[in-house]
Image (cartoon, rainbow, N blue to C red):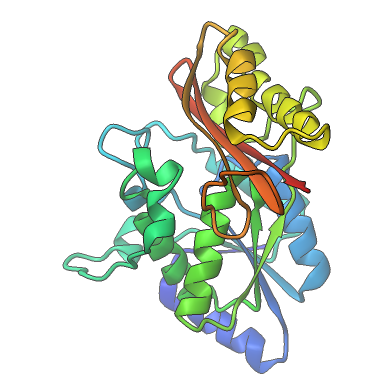
Length: 281
């Protein structure tokens, strides 16, 4: 395993691999690696000659009152994880490398970035799109691997890649969950013991929604009310949003049909968690 900090060094490495005819797979992360990242890494290694994993906590996707400073970081843990999984390259760019003094350019996303998480985090997806565009230019991957837990993020990145004519393909892999259904997330570390137990209400509410739809319910408001009942029975839970949307473009559905994405964001204590599930009818 090799560690690279410099953008120029990362670009040189990628160019050398491509000249040798080797394919590069890429897993972008903010670190504090867990089994959700593991599923991405293993798929990347299986399908590519070279596996690159980046670790960068991106300041531009955090709002002024969000958790940038306390976001979980554990470089030693991440390096042990990477060595165990035989990752070829960890790319650790510095903030100065990615956002040098005087930089002026960012990637602006259209209406899809103003839905769902974009309502309560208005500049979040501009920051995400900008850093991913930079990382693609650094790594030049054939394929980039993302997780379905961040469904809106994955759709936005796919849109950006199409619009900006990148040759990189995007693969979105299923959510990895704990045995009790909680979606794996680095932010789960913030949860106190009682909050951790209550956080299972997110997936329970999503499963209830899926069961109701499969039983014939087609009204989004009735689905949302059933989910709210489950979530709000937990004293630490506060709903940011619950939506039933078209899974391809995130447009809210008036009647549940086709490829449906049921998506939510819930505060459990002070920790904001997201999750989703898809249903086809």
